[in-house]
Image (cartoon, rainbow, N blue to C red; front, side, top):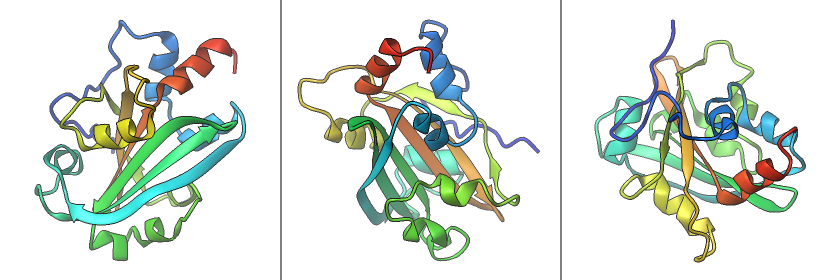
Length: 188
């Protein structure tokens, strides 16, 4: 069964045709993003924050849950060869973070992929992508890691993982430095 993309207003099921081939590839690249990033260089992961909150409308729609429902959030920053490249935000219903998705709370600096790609009961939705803008909650996280002068477009993708009926929404934002590195080394 194919799980539909986690759409909400502004999220697209296809990459806009005006974007570069690199954007089209990375915004819809299947499999674990971390594995793809490791082909570009040494990947370091830093946890920015982990906390409970009420699900923002955008993300609640992406998971098919009621807005303001309690969720567990994990925000991380991935660097490639010391260059901040990708910010990711993952969230699941709070009860699931103590049950089906409890591994999310124990990852520390390991990537989420370590728990997602070894379990055949997990289904992944199709991707959705968008240019991030306020009021998408993930926009503030991504902007927060950038220098004030870095005003490049922030393109992100997201998908939902489902295990025993419980969603885990994962959004990944490619920072301007990532795209600059890809342009300098397109063959990687």
